[in-house]
Image 1 (spheres, rainbow, N blue to C red):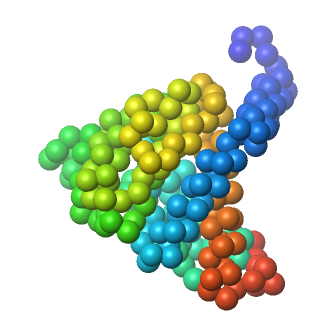
Image 2 (cartoon, rainbow, N blue to C red):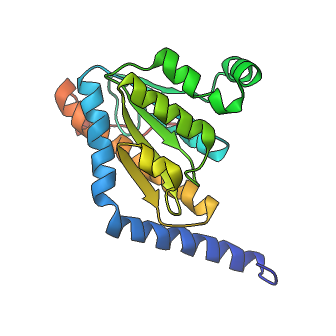
Length: 208
């Protein structure tokens, strides 16, 4: 905003982020818990998480996949998760041969099975390549989750579970998405640790 000092910008951004997270804590508990439970059910069925996004949402997808494959708060078995936006050779080949709208849907067609869960991240909920991939996931019989913001866009009406962050600010939405991702990773670890014999006494913080 014009005329704001650096300190004012810092304070405003932090206060906006904190306020949005308080709103999420009051209004999105059911959706966040449901997301964690859907992923837990998939892992119990020996399926995998397939996740993707564009730009900052691509970074969030990689981040969440990394926490699941590696560890979040405790040492435990690796959980299968793939971020589809990481393979530049595949992405550029698909974009060149089929168009950018197909860069995720073609991978979903190749990699996703019925026991898997597919998570699309789009701050607007309108990204064509995300929506196309979710539609392909439904054809493949997989469960689907969408992380978006604002009104939720088309993505929210395509997925089995929509988590719509109540904000129109892209940076605030992205900050909320990764917070939700962290919470879900903790909930998944907590449940799966019980099933695999790990306890909180084994817990450590990641070094990343």
